[in-house]
Length: 323
Image 1 (cartoon, rainbow, N blue to C red):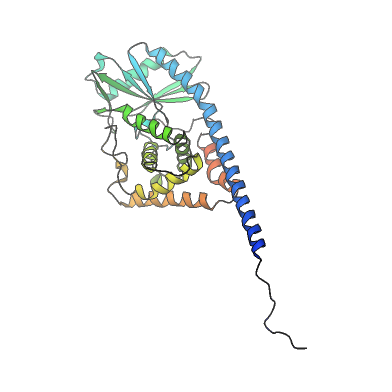
Image 2 (cartoon, rainbow, N blue to C red):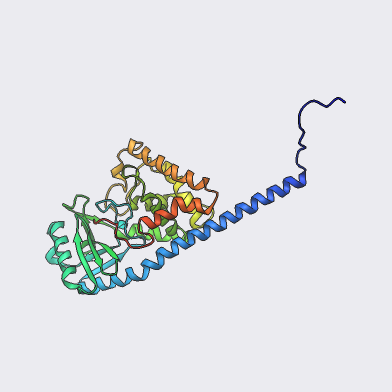
């Protein structure tokens, strides 16, 4: 008997089967979305629970030790995880300590930092204080419970607030609340999800090699730029991906520093389109691609979760270097 000759025949799936397959895929997408959201909430909850009360308590302790002639401006996002050896932007520290000390006006930054370090060291009791160290710009206070505070001393003269310049040699007038106010408003507009998204971006970048890693202050400026006019989902996961996507191209051009600390927040990357900027762009794009390609929570954890543990977002902050 003759055959039809053409090999095996598999009929096309019916409309009903196609609909069932599509429903199954959609259910799987929703399940992954829910699981990833839960995973991110757990990571952020561990970070926030660990730091919030302890940082506030220690900031109050430092303020009390300093006496009445000071003003502490705590930043919405403090403490850079970028591991740079200098303070790149105001929000890379935990707090700006503005001193009302006429006797310090006219002194070089090094003298003020030395005096501030001495004042903190002499004022805090040894039962809570581990050590106090200083760099070109900031003073780091390490407590016995493992919490660190990175404090940037500043001087107030009338309505002017000045901080050391990047070299730590001169004073530079700044408007420290300008960036903080903009970030607070943007976070409110994003239903409180922008700050968590920024924390997630910083944790991703903490393990990136130094030449391709941007500063904490730069991350925050890019995030602010990314949500300008943004109308998409306002969740930490959605904003994490939005910031990475936007930053891939936006990092190729300088961003103005609204605080006045520097002309731009990213002078360290050079001119527009520089090789340094392109390298950073490629690194950001690679991270975004890995997250978008992740089809399980374990893959998200591999990209993001381990870094949060390794970089101190879960655990202590001892790997932060001093300003």
